[in-house]
Image (cartoon, rainbow, N blue to C red; front, side, top):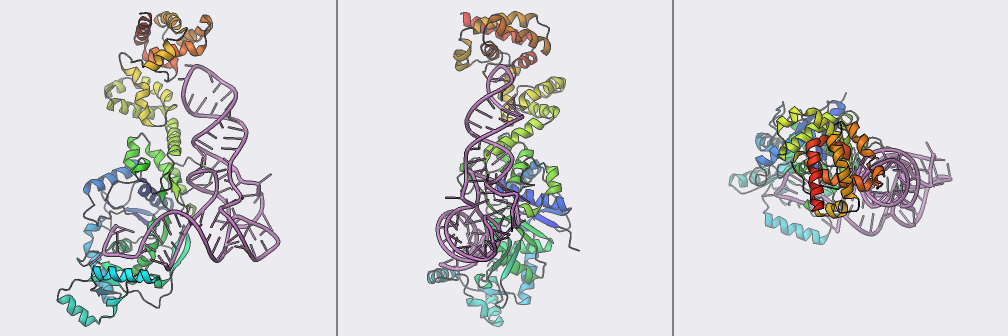
Length: 488
RNA sequence: GCCCCGUUCGUCUAGCGGUCUUGGACACCGCCCUCUCAAGGCGGAGAUCACGGGUUCGAAUCCCGUACGGGGUACCA
């Protein structure tokens, strides 16, 4: 029987959570959930220069926003902590000592300059350019004496010569062989005693009993080195799944140039967490090749590492937008009303009490809006006419609609209807619908004139509904104002 | 230099030796619906499966090579 699945997402808090990292988190999380495993969040904050508390908090917030919950890690605790690398120094020290004792690590006294020169020379000659093992055969006593004398040194992994190729059993790419001769005696611990990434990450993954490592493609080439350390430390080697990168629209590395890279920025742009999650999940994974709407619940049940694709993906903002639109449209009216209200409160167009007191009214408005937007940021501009006393009519709407033949006449005819009509949507619809016929004007001319008068713009939610929701007094007032300005 | 990885419509992908003159989705185009904008419905165009060799009765699918792209080769992660 195999061990219970344990996976982790280990961001380094040198920046905010970007979409690539988010996708890695999603895959780890979805995989853990789909097999009933444990999802661990670990903060790889070994870079003291660039790691910040703010970034850590930001990352946690972004994950929570996306709906990704972790079983162990910051804020949660767990039996395998601490979950910050900066707090795991003892583990690294012990692991290094274990390797020294076993003879699988040795001290190296070469200086950075010497190494750089040798590397340069080796590269010119062609072929292997890794460490040349100068210090590997210094006898232990001499080495101990030099260390005792305070000579600066790092600790290197002693790669055994007689080992066959290291095979990385990658779930995404299949078995990949790395010749042992291409792997050099890399540094485990720096001269200041701190562990290098390739060492620390193995110690952590080993101690935390990770069964699967799902991470970015950029780590694939480091994996054979890490496997060597897993073996030296006596840990079971986990299975790997390396995810290809996400690129910008020009096929280059995703960067600010392509718009947003951070999850937080997408939230600000009006994307729903559900749609970002869905989109990212599908960027390199598919349920069946046909289904495009894959919710968190489906992911938690149906995700499988076997269906991850190997090729890099280009981040397609248009598809994300489309997807966001479908999630917005599928939202229950009550839910959308609440989110809409929150935005209106932020924009200081209404108060929270306004919403509480007129919930039904907002619920009625909801589908009118949700059906015609792709981003939540479009809400306020689309409905603001309902929450202001008067409305600005822009130049274009005036010349292209109000000053056209028939516009004034339409408004004049509509006015008494608005003043006296029973105020229900059905009654308004019935009364206004026949206007073009009676005036012998095109529906477009009549209704656009009314629309501009009522909403101030040429594009709005459906006209009769807009008038109905605006209420009689304001509607009448606006039409009167426009008539007056056209006649003057 | 050396070691690895990748390459199916513009984009995300399905495909794991015959059912593929490659299926779906976004985007695009046209028509329908229509009070604007959307949404929705219907239809269209778009991929010599990077290229060249093999293996096989048969290859997008297996093997080799080439090209292009990417990663690693750090006392970065």
